[in-house]
Amino acid sequence: MGRKLLLEHINVPGINTFAVYKEKGGYRAVEKALKTMSPDDVVEEVKKSGLRGRGGAGFPTGMKWSFLAKPEGVPRYLVCNGDESEPGTFKDRFLMTHIPHALIEGMIVSSFALGANTSYIYVRGEMMPQIRILEKAIAEAKEAGYLGKNILGSDFDLELYVQPGGGAYICGEETALLESLEGKRGNPRIKPPFPAIAGLYNCPTVVNNVESIAATVPIINDGGEEYAKIGIGRSTGTKLISASGNINKPGVYEIELGVSVEDFIYSDEYCGGIANGKRLKAVVAGGSSVPILPANLILNLVNGDKRLMTYESLSDGGFATGTMLGSGGFIVMDEDQCVVRNTWNFSRFYNHESCGQCSPCREGTGWMTKILHKIETGKGSYSDIDLLVDVSKQIEGNTICPLGDAAAWPVASAVRHFRDEFEWHINEPRLSQERNYGLAHYADPLPPIEKAEA
Image 1 (cartoon, rainbow, N blue to C red):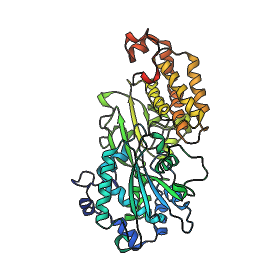
Image 2: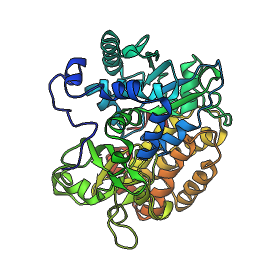
Image 3: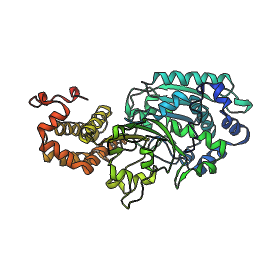
Image 4: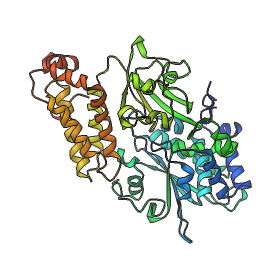
């Protein structure tokens, strides 16, 4: 059994309440930080831990904290990004639902380290149950003296607020999140300046993911060096993985970074193998925004070694043969799944969620969606496949925020690794129609994108 740092007490009745969480060792990190450490000491421990952002980018958290500007007389802010909207990713929602005080404790410790006296948890607007859970947890922590003025008799003050999101995937991008938090439309900002210099209300701001902030609790409790002993190389600690798709045991799992992909999929401790005795076809390893890999490449590296659940191993070989750990949205597809249809579904999502600021993303995601639908319904041509790749290249790297890349990568990798499946849809239009819609649809005109079947 792998070591559990965040989900160790997940099955304890009442762990979502302050009393039970405290009984199980909760808020020790706050007491240790405020009574025995300086803010710089806390930052140094996070640096030693090697913790990398758990929201997708994987940037070293301690280094990100060290970039925060500290001008005199200007407030600083910590904002938790709980706008979890990536298809296939639900581990932050799980954490906020079942162990909300882990996030609250992490927010207190992190705010102390950053010198932030007002902090925010920005939660996806559709997650109203989680918002209510967090508000209740904040009230409990404040009543117990862990929030408010002079926490635990120290000179540190902190007010913590929960803000419902703006109902858009783009608000998960940190600068769009800040715009939304300020009451504006959630459009990404051009950088620089970066939030560490001019973020919320034009003040120095750090934006971190839910899991990243919660992970600071075991780091302070056990020490950064102890945390760094877990994992492999620069992929230290544990990671929450949202596992879904054609597996026997979908759910949220906490793994020690370094577990092999094969063990994660097939061991009873985690996913329990492919459902219904089917064969593995492909995996989207880090949420819908990362490249899809066929079974042979997701299980093994090009040199034959097992691929590991780490930032480095999953990206080994670049986009030609690798993918990314991303947000940990691990989507498994069996032999019966249609890659073209799934890619079309992803493309529809990014087309719908594009904020429209950048023309390559605004127009390109729509083009890709229409071309994919044309191929998927048996009305495509060979030139459409090459056009898909060309459009994805025109989007990638040409937008203000990473949404354009997130839309382009799955399409490009699907064509790269499953071109024969795209060609099958073109060569066998009638079978393609029958497979996905039934024969009655074959003679029908192409339906509008917004009315197409999901």
